[in-house]
Image 1 (cartoon, rainbow, N blue to C red):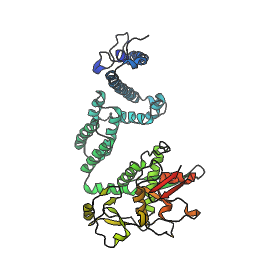
Image 2: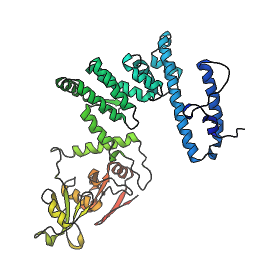
Image 3: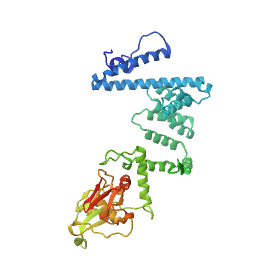
Length: 428
C-alpha cells in the first residue's frame, strides 16, 4: 500500500518541480527511461489517493505532468532524429512518417507529421534557434512544426539574410502562448508580402485564385453527393465566417440537446445561407441601413406623423424621437392593424410569402417558433402549417417561422400548430 499522495511520487526535488533523480545503477538513456517508468508506475498507483489532495495540489500536479509531457516529447524527437540519421526507415523501405507510425501506433497522425516535419527542418543550419528552443523546452514540438511550416512559405520569397531575420520573427510568434494558429498565418502572410515585389504578389494571388473550384462526386449508391470546394483566401474567409457563425452553434430546444454533430451543424448553416441566396433570383438582396417596423392603426395611417414607437428586426423598441431620426436612412414598414389589433392582410394566391408578410412574421414570431428554439427570424423560413401541397393558403394565420432544422423536423413528423394573432403553438 502506498501511503503518500501523487505529489510525493512525482513532485520530488528535481528541476522545475519534475521527477526527483533516482540513484540506481546503470547509465544511458535506457536506464534513465527505466527509472522514469518505475516512477510513473508508482504515480499511477498513488492516483488512487487523489481525493485526499487539496485544490492547490491538483493544480500543481497538472503543471508537473505538463513539464513531464514536454520532456517526453523532446526525448521522442531526439530518438526520431537519431533514427533518421542512421537511416533505420530506409533499411526496411519505409518513409520516416510510416516508420514512426509503425513504431508508435498510438501516436495520432498529426503528431507523427509534426515530429517528421521538425526532424527534417532542424537539419538546416538556418534553424539553429528553433533547435535550441525545442531542446531547452521553450517550444513544444507542435508549435515548432507550425512555425517551421510557416517558414517554408516565406523562404522562397527572400534572400538568406532576410530569411535569418524572418526565422527569429516566426520563432518569437510561436513561442508566445497567446498567439493562435490564425495569428501565425497572418505573420507569415505579412512576411511573404514584404519579401515579394508587388507585381509578384499580385501574380501569385492570381495563380492561387485560378485554382478555385468545386468538384462533385457520388457516394455509395448515389444517394449521397460529395462536393469538394477549393478556395482562395477570400473565399475561405467567407466559408469560415458561415461555418463558425451562430447558425452552426448547438441549438437545444424543448425536445432536448441538439442531436446534430458539429459537421452536420456546419452543413445546415451553409445550406441556410445558400438558400437565402437562391431565394433571391433577381440578384443579391439589398437592404437599407435598418428596417423599422411600425405598428399603426388603419385610422391613423393617412395622417401618420411618426409618433409611434418602432421595433427593429432584432426586437429592440425605439422611442418616437429615434424613429424620426432613423426615418431619414431606413426602410419604414407600417404594420397596419384592424379592429382588436389584428394585422390586416389579404390571402396571397402564390406559394411564397411576400416581403411584407415575412416582415409581419418577424414582428409576430420574433424567432423560430419551434418550442425552445431562438434562431433569429431572418434565418427562418415561412412554413405553411397546412401545407401548400394540401391546399394551405399563404396568409399570416397559416404561416409560421421555422429554422431549417426544425422545418425539416416538422415535415418529417407531420406536426401541426395553432396560430392566432399573438403567435404560434406547436403540438409536439
